[in-house]
Image (cartoon, rainbow, N blue to C red; front, side, top):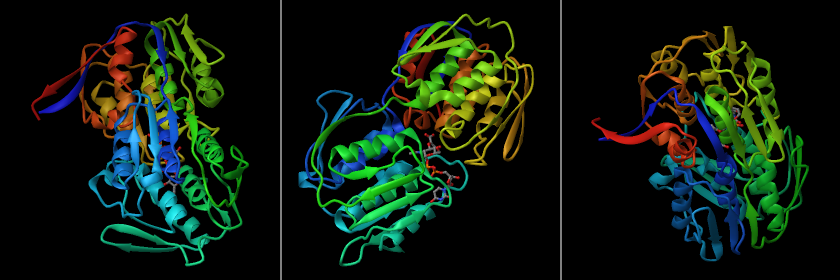
Length: 426
Ligand code: EPU
């Protein structure tokens, strides 16, 4: 039996949805919290399976994890041990690679199985490894593991230029460099809000990191880290997903716990295609849209932050099926991230994929179908399509959705959607 999501589309949505803590912050904050030796309390933790997998990894390392409530994690690394991470949990998610930087920084060595995660085309980690090497570590491979070892005198600060402003490499090198002797400078560092969040946690723990949010990150090594408390920033990709859902289906909908500035590129594209919304403080309000009218078409190109996020292009593609004329989406981060397109075509979309672009001709009216979430944001694209479609949509491989969306079906039901989980024959 397989668990699927079934959506009966066409329902108008109304009310308020509250955005959870950022998934892509959380998956780095958890390994970062293990760098010290005192308790770190993290608030606003999303209930997603990636968090469960990381907690499993912490427990394998002897870290004590307690949860006073569903959204709070207390991570106590005082009993942590220097052990290899080789269990199946490592391959449940990509972000397990943050333990490379954390363990190398803390113990001067790390042995970790190669990570899993969404299949978005090639996802190398060469920049992470080059960064560790620049700090003095050796990199070897044995038994499907990456083995990192610092020299006997420990890691030493270095000047590192990233060929690509990689989110993962920036965070991983930052974690390894926290205890390195002297100053590390990461040039062409990624500027995503999640990087500021991780650096903020580390600084609360006693690290000395400057320049976060700019492309030059400076890390002055320290001797030890202490405990602290930290509230995770709101998930800008989850927020964008609900804003798109609102644009497609809402009469009047509030999306709360949002930092609208994180969504500038997406909100301006929505304005361009003709979606009506306002934002105030930490909320986006979607109202006054005539759903019988098609949107205007647009062209989107994904870029590193503050450009249009690659994670939002898949769900945005669904909305563009309702635009009159031809719209395009061009991927500059993961050129093969178009597996959602054939699934949307099963529901009646007219999309031509010519990598690195997809051309969407509309308006087309989507109908329910059996579709597969090939990756997390493909899942989001299909949920939006299911809400828009005529009839019933059955989404398979929902484990990808559960990796990153906190209580998705409950949040949508509260807005008036007809969505449920069911077990069906494989
Ligand atoms: N890259 C390299 N070498 C490296 C690292 C990256 O060539 O060593 C390339 C990648 O192949 C890609 C580009 O650099 O073409 C950018 O990748 P980046 O390292 O920034 O991505 P990531 O850290 O692996 C994070 C998010 C992704 C999000 C990207 C881009 C997490 C856990 N994942 O991935 O989120 O798409 O940044 O913003 O933070 C998602 O949430 O659905 C998701 C996939």
